[in-house]
Length: 183
Picture 1: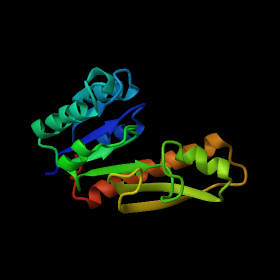
Picture 2 (picture 1 turned 45 degrees about the horizontal axis):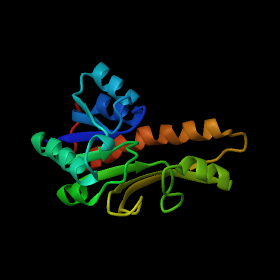
Picture 3 (picture 1 turned 30 degrees about the horizontal axis):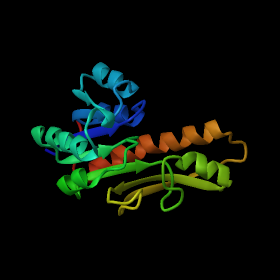
């Protein structure tokens, strides 16, 4: 059985969708006050949180993350709103075993503000992408994508909500396809 860890920086809504369907070994947040940690507690999922500023540098920070992953014998790291760029230490230790969800149809609108960037560009559609993580920003090999249309009566909020709904369907589907067993 594949052992998964989920990394998130904020509210953790994708984490919750994953944890309700799949056994999650642990969640990690790079923010000690992330709401995702409360979600983890409510779901009975082990959680860890520490921040880059607590470490001498990013190398030492990522070495601590790799140690956690190794201790838990993690097979697949699922980034779900993790807002740190994966550095060379973590990437080399877990290359080919880290996936990310991005709220745009890559290669369109990479980076931290995919939904807002698509909205401001006035596109007719955007989407959601799940991809393997590499050394670039949202440049890894695409696993699966889905398009989300921008409707004539959309507000930014309704467009954003539909993109999140697409995320909540796509991530579990990809995990099943990658061989992660459901609860």
